[in-house]
Image (cartoon, rainbow, N blue to C red; front, side):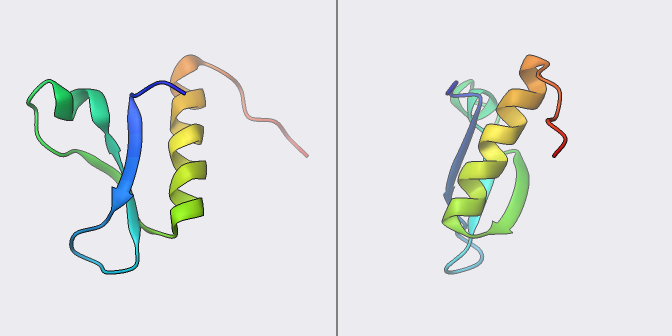
Length: 62
């Protein structure tokens, strides 16, 4: 997966995780949180979803 979106423990909410824009942060733009309040697994799924969304892959309907 690209390093565009990454996840880490939320420093403001113990036991929760957040998804952030890793490329912006690496470029010195600071922390842009795109989703927070997630479990670790939820953060992994959301980061992958944002990655796919920005690559133009359509959602799969069940």
